[in-house]
Image 1 (cartoon, rainbow, N blue to C red):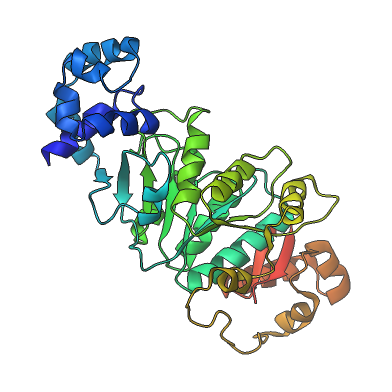
Image 2: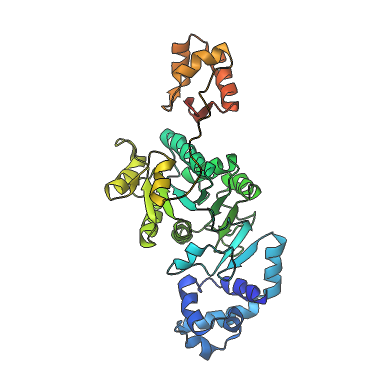
Length: 363
């Protein structure tokens, strides 16, 4: 346990990142010895003298046990390379995290993990495809890894939660309640924990979501996954950086094709052009990764109408989004009846509301 105290304390010194710590630990393997080392010993690690001087000045400002108590009080655990819970695939990285701060439970290695990333500004197409694909994956026991961001990330996590499947959110900041980012996904983060998933980060308590943290966060998302699925990305999207990490880490890259007229599909279409696996459904991913899973699409039978109003609307609904106004004009029902029927059908899981008064069939 004392080793964890010192690891946490060292993590608080932000100039000792993963690469520098790997360099230090070649000479000084134990965290306690790093914390207590004199200047001459630390200089032998090859770390610049200026940084060593800053570290030596930093140490007296930290009460190691009190810093650990802060984690305990906030329900945050620390997982290191020595722990079974530390993802095996992460250990393969050139600069794996020194430790992971965890709330919830990281699913064990018997559960395959797939990263899903994409644009924060999600289109109607993205709102349709992300829950569909993510739900299909979750239903087979595949663990979805993403970054809790607005847009595609949040939709992917939400689909897993709704299917009672664990999912892992990797944050670019600390994971205590006061720091969870973005705040709009605060409740989603708690729902992830409640469904036996985890929110994790390599950053200690008090770390803000700074811009430079997110590329490092992305390497963890791809690094702990068998592959990365990109669902919508502009030409400059940060999710493309995650796909580049995946290639560097020898992971598979998948992409969902989109309209050539949609800016949010430029990145994914280019990925496919460069050799990423084109994905139409979850089975495409399962086949490439050669995963042994239960059949994806169990036949639940046809969706049948329960009321006269449903019998008029169901034939008009498909996987292509349709506007409420069109349903009104083609169904002979008035707006009030269409809206009420769609609401009931959504509650039954027959249709999904994409926003903007657009609907699709769920099955």
